[in-house]
Amino acid sequence: MIENTSSSGKKLFLESYGCQMNFSDSEIVASILTSKGYSTTKNFEEADVIFVNTCAIRENAESRVRQRLQDFKKVKQKKPDTVIGVLGCMAERLKSQFLEQEKLLDIVVGPDAYRDLPQLLEQAESGQKAVNVILSREETYADISPVRIDSNGVSAFISITRGCDNMCSFCVVPFTRGRERSRNPESIVAEACDLFEKGYREVTLLGQNVDSYLWAGGGLKKEILTEQQKAASVNFSGLLEMIALIHPDLRVRFSTSHPKDMTNEVLEVMAKYDNICKYIHLPVQSGNSRILELMNRGYNREWYSDRIAAIKRIMPDCGISTDIISGFCSETEEEHQDTLRLMEQVQYDFAYMFMYSERPKTLAERKYKDDIAEEVKKRRLQEIVQLQQQHSALKTKAAVGKVHRVLIEGVSKKSEAQLCGRNSQNTMVVFDKGQYKKGEYVNVLAESCTATTLIGRVI
Ligand code: SAM
Ligand code: SF4
Image (cartoon, rainbow, N blue to C red; front, side, top):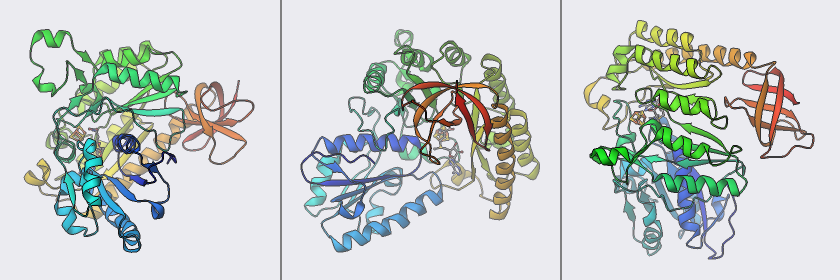
């Protein structure tokens, strides 16, 4: 975390859990509070305000946060004036009930209420508990310039949409982050230009479903009704092109793509610009059409396979990663095998893999029984993980002997004498330092590899 040294004397400690979107939100929170004179600290014991930006996606994410709160409570016992707050998805999910459960909490703030933080802090400092978990249909924080936390000074996140309208049956996000809204493209371009001028060389556009991005003047997507509005709107491929055109040395990445909405138009824009990284995170969740239907994902196995075929046809060198859930309600052994078979067919470069965790309020919790035993979920997950490890290793090996354009992110973790950075496909590449510096592009010939990292020399 950056130590910011503005001068009101009050110190903020901010810890984030969960997805990239949460980390990006923390940068908005830091911006709002530093503009009110707070400085940030990496040491929670010296903080006047401790905020935890939380994740509610799986039960174990919530348990980790609850455990961590115990550490912060010890600070409060020593320094009772310390304000402790919970932000983000758990705040919205548990609302004021959280204040009851976690007696030493002072503030609970949902993801759309961060503008209210200065006022809520005043309230908490005067001894009252403060809660705002109201979800918005418009808030995109478009005008707030994020304070980059834990930044390498080279790559940064930019949020382009908030919320989600998809209602996948396992997922709590539509409840914790509200309806889908797109952010004004001009503000996105301005943020990316500003980052480039400050020396950043890579931006990652963030949204729960970036392919669903649609700007026609603000508000909810489903309220964009007239043909005239539609004609004047900017969709995701349009936005991607606008960002790619800022400068050939500014790389563009994005996450997450949704199989039901990812169009060939997006793939063609990716293929057209060298500075749009050839990497797509396309979560499949399951390789079986019956399970996908129960998950309410809006596509079946054939549709997903067609999207993968389109990626491979339009960009043969594109890296592909995914998310997979093991042991969703009623999943049979054969249906689990379908997931493994799909993995064999696609050969993902990388995957995030999870056991199904039932979440309160979701469609699955209301409609289906969480009937796959924990050991079965665990064993299926292990099979998925093992297969993915094989595929990742094969993919890394296949990249040896090739030249990769790498954006240097900094010194390698293992050796001060080496630098590291990613290639377009998002694989980490390590090479000797020489005269090269962070933020520069180099061409590296990959000469060997570990399971996930390429090792080479600059040519
Ligand atoms: N919006 C993205 C999408 O649709 O692909 C993903 C958002 S979610 C933050 C990240 C991943 O968490 C999901 O793709 C899914 O694999 C996993 N996930 C979400 N809810 C889950 C649950 N109840 N149990 C296990 N994994 C879950
Ligand atoms: Fe959750 Fe589905 Fe939305 Fe992703 S697309 S955030 S999994 S509801």
